[in-house]
Amino acid sequence: MIEEKILSTADTADLSHDRRRVTILGSTGSIGRNTLDVIGRSKGEFQIEALTAHSNVKLLSEQAREYNVPFVALADDSGYSELKDALAGTATEVAAGPEAVIAAAARNADIVVGAIVGAAGLRPTMTAVRRGATIALANKECLVCAGALFMEEVAKHQAVLLPVDSEHNAIFQVFDFNNADSVEKIILTASGGPFRTCTREEMAHMSPAQAVAHPNWDMGAKISVDSATMMNKGLEYIEAYHLFPVRQDQIDILVHPQSVIHSMVSYHDGSVLAQLGTPDMRTPISYALKWPKRLTIPAKRLNLVEISRLDFEAPDEIRFPAIRLAREALQTGGGAPTILNAANEIAVQGFLKGQIGLLDIAAIVEETLAVMGSHNISRIQDVHDIDDNARVIAQSLMEKLSR
Ligand code: NAD
Ligand code: MG
Image (cartoon, rainbow, N blue to C red; front, side, top):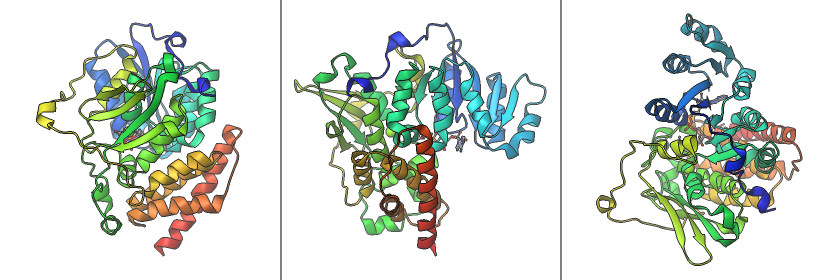
């Protein structure tokens, strides 16, 4: 069981070409833009095969022109003609609709960067997995909603899965895969988000603008709200369980407000290995793009004298119940993590639109899990069905609350 979870290793990856061809699913987002920044600085190392976005025609067309991209896909097909016009006179092939995003993932790139937000990334990312590509995965929701099945497909198709999420990338850098038995624990660090020191009463009144203003990281709106509720750390806990050959009781969460230590692995001999750096996603992105080598990245260098101290505290599951909900969902297994993720996506959207308060997010997730009960997952269609149902239930719970 544990061996099965070990990531595919170098011998299954054929990344020997001079220029790696890269497809970015979600190129207009925070991770997507950072990925293009890394690629733009590494002249001659990479060429772009395809880019996809949800609806940002302007940025997608600019990216396509700048990187001379053969294929672009827009998930929202209402922007098709505008995108076509914006790329008139170029050699770029343009397509739109969810199937077009899947077609982008199916193209023959060496590396597919999974940077779509939410379970919407599952189908396209799975398409890339099934052709045995190397996946640089930021889209943690894929692993949360379809974890075991996703990893089975990775193994079956000899895809290579490289974590981009900074904590998991850190663990990947210090985890001794050849001696997985010598690992005692993996320790996921958490900044604690913008409301780390707030009371529940204070959190109840926080606006979307306050929630997305993260102290250390500049990220998309959804993950920023997840950081504010600490659901992000809950999702990452589930993500870590699927990525690394460890049991659930071997995963710890540690609040570390400076975000200098990105995560750690402790070994049976008492050694603790950590990866450190300033908070800049270009570091883990570049590690995944060039793995097993490294690129030169102009991330601000770590100055420990200037920082002078590093703080740590235990996570508070009373003020941040999302961590408990994620832990329990993983323990319950079956469809519970899928429900947790789907209900969270709906509740976060509702919060961002001002329909519910911050504390309602975890409450809706908990209630959706209770209403849905237990579900088995044996094939990927089960994941999609449970995800759809959970969204309907979460939506109706939210409407009741906002009335
Ligand atoms: P973002 O909102 O900035 O970007 C999301 C991207 O996905 C955009 O390109 C958008 O067009 C696309 N997209 C959104 N909905 C879509 C849909 N239905 N179909 C197709 N495409 C769609 O998000 P982000 O912050 O870049 O995060 C992306 C993923 O990476 C998330 O899963 C997040 O948890 C993870 N992640 C992000 C960071 C970070 O620093 N931003 C760090 C770690 C992990
Ligand atoms: Mg992270």
